[in-house]
Image (spheres, rainbow, N blue to C red):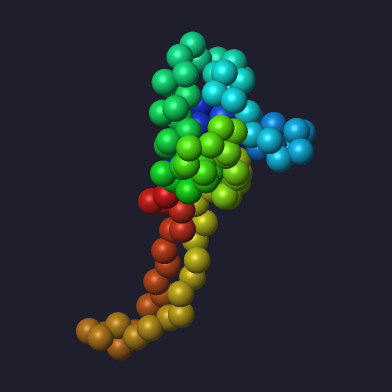
Length: 104
């Protein structure tokens, strides 16, 4: 799950890379796009996106962000049905379902 600022930053990075032939934005450009004053706040947001696997950065290089996966803004928990199994106590078939995305 991403915070609103993380989603906004990820969206900006995606657009910037697409519009600028693969060149990622600078921290100053990201700060202006997200509406924060401090580059350290942007660094925190970038690190959070990297930890969650949305972006990758090359060490010791400027403008070296690449998108690893995109954020689907319409993510909603869905149910995935599993095969029915017999209850060991009563022998009746039972269906088990899990909620996908609830713990993400």
